[in-house]
Length: 60
Image (cartoon, rainbow, N blue to C red):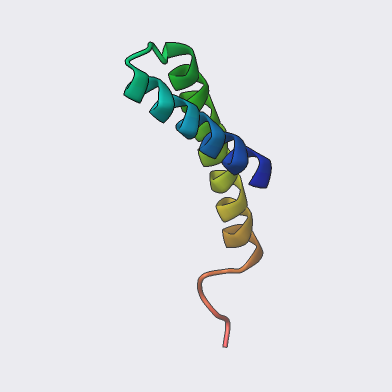
């Protein structure tokens, strides 16, 4: 996850620089979209693991 966030930050910086210079950034935008989908997928998996590990109701 940390590597994905670092790469996403780097891509954002590249996109920002390209926008300021008026250059196209389509390739970087596609990479950004892919990284976001990977992060969301991993977050979904980790949250579903937590819910399976800890039941929401207690049996007291």
